[in-house]
Image (cartoon, rainbow, N blue to C red):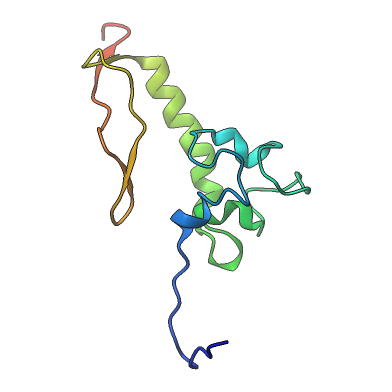
Length: 123
């Protein structure tokens, strides 16, 4: 076994961990419910997004968790709800949505989804 020198910086590949079939069933399928359901191979299904459960590591976890998480979770619900309530969303091209990803500094859609927003009501 190799020894890692004291002071070495290590980086965990969360992209690879999130796609590991030993941990996730059908890891390449888009299934956000996997984080709160039996789709995880873990036997312990009870956890909190505010805790240190490593299933949530892609979103930040434990002591290194995002300090704004407690504000962002309700805020995201509010803004997404407001955008869905106030606007009608129309896809600009008629082709099916392609969720293929490409890995760069962050994970991006290979073919970004383009939409147009139309107000649901007049001012």
